[in-house]
Image (cartoon, rainbow, N blue to C red; front, side, top):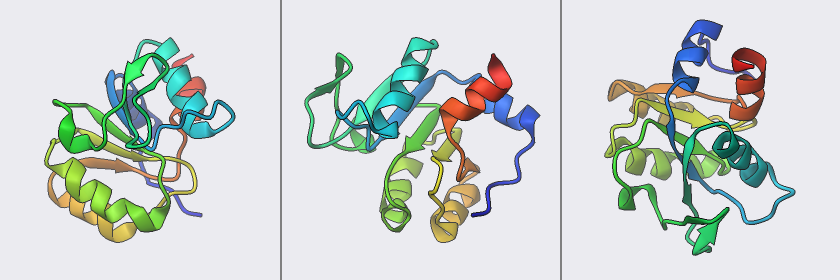
Length: 136
């Protein structure tokens, strides 16, 4: 699967932003949607869980949708590609600087909507892997 064309320098800039809403954050510790945000939290990020099926994950209050939170730098999405369009439409209203689609997630139509609003889009990349590769 293809991925965005951002340079390492651009990815470093994105990773320097600290307030991250994680859509689809999981209670299941064996899933990437749990251990990736846990890693981010342990590495200085302010992680905001978005999961309508949980009240709290990793000791943090869960929100039902991104529309319930205040401003955020990065919206990190752990949902199937075919569910991304409505999530991005909702996320755009919060005016994040970056929408980050995790490994295996790509939706050209949704990504184009975000770019038209001036939001950078990273797709088919793992924040944990990129952080370890570029920030350690």
